Image 1 (cartoon, helix red, strand yellow):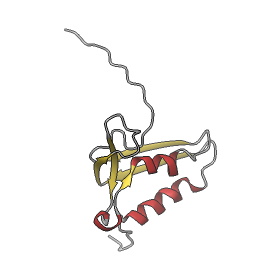
Image 2 (cartoon, one colour; image 1 turned 90 degrees about the horizontal axis):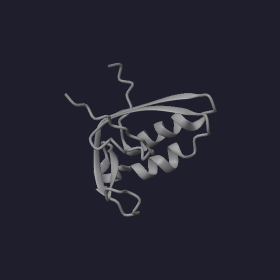
Image 3 (cartoon, rainbow, N blue to C red; image 1 turned 60 degrees about the vertical axis):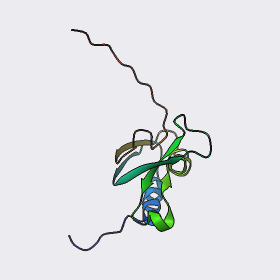
Amino acid sequence: DDGNCTSPTKANIWESLLWLVGDAQPGDALFLHFSGHGGQVRDVSGDEESGFDQTMIPVDHKVAGSILDDDILDKILKPLAKGVHMFSIMDCCHSGTILDLPYTMTVDKVTG
């Protein structure tokens, strides 16, 4: 450890997310990796089929609060220009829909 670390506070996570997408142009490939705590809170906007919003839980969540999936979608993903590709690994609980992206799933039945 070189001592050059930034604590994963809510403000620092937002600053990093905004930095990542800040100058993104069509044709760019972005990589987002989050390893930390994740959680769920009741969905107050009514946009979640499950009735819960997924959250990233920063180290200062008791004071600053968590980061909602709705906010990540609205502030980070929706503003990306068409043609910008983001690859994301979310290593946290309740991360399956933390980016609120549409998806298609096909399951082939295996017999035997």
